[in-house]
Amino acid sequence: MEQDRMHPNIKRRLLPKWGTTYGPSGEGKFPGLLILHGSEGGVSGWSHRTAAMLAADGFLCYPHSYSKGGNAWNAGHIEDVELTETVSALSALRNFEACNGKVAVYGVSRGAEHALLLASLMGEEDMLGQPDAVACLAAPDVICGAFDARGFRDSGDPGWQAWDPSRRAWTWNGSSDKLLPSERIKIECYARPLFLSVGLKDLTWSPEMTKRLHKRREANGLPVEAHYYEQEGHVPGSEGENHHHELLLSFLQRSLGQ
Image (cartoon, rainbow, N blue to C red; front, side):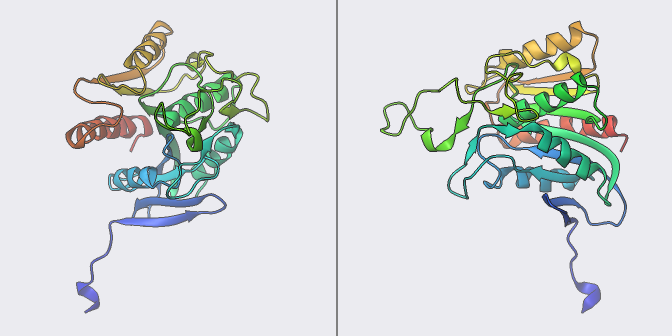
C-alpha cells in the first residue's frame, strides 16, 4: 500500500550544468557544502559517499569533480585545473533553489589544497561570494605539482615516473604564475572560519604541514580550529572517521548557522 512505502531520507537534486547534489529529502532550503576530492579522482565515488553521509545531517552537498580524464578504474589527473571554474561552481551552489545561501567548502588531501587555494585567492582579490567557511582533512601548506594517475606506480614498476616540477596542478584565470609548486599557500588572505584536521600517523602528507597552517592562522589572529588524530593515517579508519565527522559537523553547523 502507498502509505507503507519507505521514502529515502536523502534526495538527489541536479545542479544544472554541474552535477548531482545530495541533501535532505524535505522541501526546505539547506546550507550548502561543496566537496573537493583528492587524487582518487572525481569518478571514483569517494566524494559522493562523503556527500551522502553529510547530507544525512542536514547539508546540501555537491561533490565537485575537477580531475581531468579518468574513469571508474583510473583516477585521471590533476593538472592545469582552472580554479575560477570552482568559483563558478561555488556560486551556482549558493544560488541553487535548494540552498539557503550559506556555503562552505570541504576538501581532503589534494582537495584540501584546492580548498585552501580557492579561499586564499578569492580573499586576496577581495572577491564577492567567498566560502562562508573552509574545512580540510590532511592539507598541505604549500602548492604541489601536477598529479597524473597514469604514471603513479610503486618505485621499480616499469611505469613509474619521477615527479616533474614543470607540470603545474593549478591555474587562476588561465595562468599558473602565482601557483608554482613549493610556494606557500597564502591562507592569511582568507579571513573566515577554517577547520584543519590531520592524522598524526599520516605517511602521505606530513602532519607538520597542518601544524604550520594552524600556527600561521593563530599568528595572524584569524579564526582556526585544528584537530590532530593520534591513531589515524592519511585516511581515517571507521572510528576515526566517525570522530572526524562529529567535529566537522559541529564546525559546519556553527559556521553556517544551521
